[in-house]
Image (tube, rainbow, N blue to C red; front, side):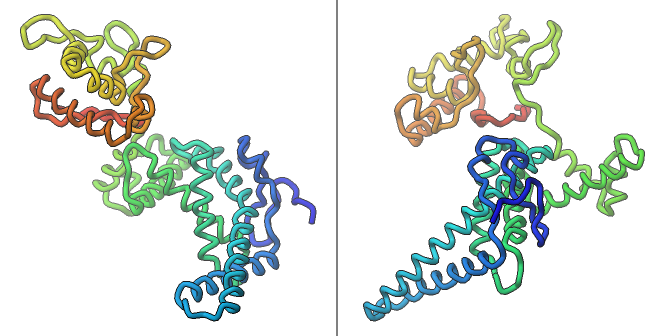
Amino acid sequence: MNPPAAGTVTAAGAPRPDAGRAARHPTADRYTEPLLDAATEVELARGIEAGLYAQHLLDTRPDLPAGLAGEYRQLARSGERARERMIRANLGLVAHWTGRRLRAGAGGELEFDELFNEGVLGLVRAVAKFDYTLGLKFSTYASTWIRSRQQRAVWRSRAVRLPDHLEHTAAVLRRVRGELEAAGVSAPDPVQVAAHAGLDADKVTGLLSALRTPVHLDAPAVNGDGHAPLLELLTGRTTAVDGADGGDSTLWDRVQDAVATLPVRSQRVLRLRTGLDDDGPDGRPRGPLTQRQVAARLGVSPAGVAKVEAAALAQLRAALGTSRKVTPVRAGRPVAARAA
């Protein structure tokens, strides 16, 4: 059978995967295999079902005759091969939905490979749950699982995570707000959105507030001297404050002095974990690293890094004279400043 033309749609409504058009990503070029026809899908689904039942008998009946057990093992292997073929044949479908989500700007902070991996997990689940007796085209059924898994991954990637039921409500609010803007309402407020969605205004206000895009600490900000990264303004690296001794010092200097009192190993771990290490190529901090990244750089285990980090933070709190819990910046995530 010849491959379908780019952008064609199956009889059941599922789009044919087109790596070049759908994903526009080099990874998608490996998944150009056309979707299976309905008869092949049913044949593979029956093979998977038979293999699972054969494996169940092998696991629950150890007293099977040797000949019969051999036949069941062969059936189980055949079922596993059918499962793998079903997954491989639909990887292009995962690439299609991944590219479509990214082009629509609905991928959140996730890259193609991350969304693709989540989609594959959804595809694996779809293979396990597919019931060929219902007469559905597998590609149509699998698309629901792929998109659902990717959507939940996008929700989990946000700096402010919400329960799934609130995410669904947020999707309704975005749709309502878009409808109001299309109707000519300029910048509809939460009360208007709540009225059109039929929801409580206070709940809508709180939910929309949680959905605001966090500002990254590397984002440019404006101070009295011009532009500076927001991180420098928040840490006091560009603003002078009165020190405890009445002298003129900066909060950044106080933190650096406190860190300098720690053991060398604790200093190194803490600087890497919090992004205080000014060893970037441009003289600016490289940014916070995860415990695994620090462990790889120092040649120790992540558990060892966690232990040294906890002790260093306790000593740092004592040196700064505060009982407030000091938490390292999570690598790759914006941080909301909290009042002491």
